[in-house]
Length: 448
Image (cartoon, rainbow, N blue to C red):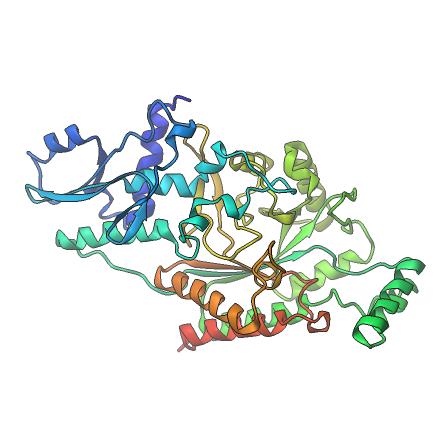
């Protein structure tokens, strides 16, 4: 697989900008082959030279281009390409750790281009991820590379500023089932199971069977949206609450359909009145069909009267890293899908939004990717498929992720499903949700 040199140059320049995070100093960081570095160092001082390891050359896209193990460490952080070496040359810093290729490897999900193993849903398993296996999933390793570069700029006496705190808060909600509809058989089974297993009688299946939907356990968004607005007001942080709506007209094995039901419009109106933005929750089957993605977005626009720009896939389904092209072509500007179902953490290696780079050709797209760092089901779901943490363990794990985001000046994307957010279901999710929001306010402090 041969890459266009112009696209590679554009991608590497973009990554330098992404890592430096200060346009005043981007020009002082160069990405060159070693022989070119040695030539340039003779005529200039005060630059950082990152030595090109040759990652983008002829074996690009081949199994041989995957990182060699054991991984080397530079400045205490594992790298995927290059050498763990550095030297000073004529007032310049020469870094042999290929931080650019290493960042590209993670941000583009390059290993998924080559490793074709998938789970039963077609997703790349966390157990195959080098980030998980090298114990890097819990840190934004790409942001750490940027921290290294900025430290070297400071060493060269550039007054670069570090930015801590949350750049943005995204509270996101996948509305898989906004209301429950029961057949007579389903109603009897659900009530019977509750009596036998939980020793309690629940009424909503009976009411819903009779067409009375005021008693709706799926309606949890009102509580969440109010709490999130409270966090925004208390902290002054740029905050968005997004409700991702299923927009298919056809059920599939894993997707319910409700958009065109007459009961849905008042629900969407209420969400918007409570401050939520609407996004699309691409159906399970559409994740492998670009035309289906277009049709679903068109239907959601028609039904809501809004320009729908945000997307997240049902089941976080992304079979291949380049399937993101479907969403760019369908007219979305932002995607919030990228995260692992099995574990929380930084699948993209960053807590900052980034333009999607197609690993097939190094093309920088118009689609912005937001890594999903914490998902409710990942924390409370059962092993071996998810983490199955106790409440205290869940708080500790989420706190560590939130602290990393804060320390690296990034954005939080916290996913909480409306259908799981109910203490009556026997989980602690509502308590964890409340704790996370309270911790954010505590971390930031009240707005002055």
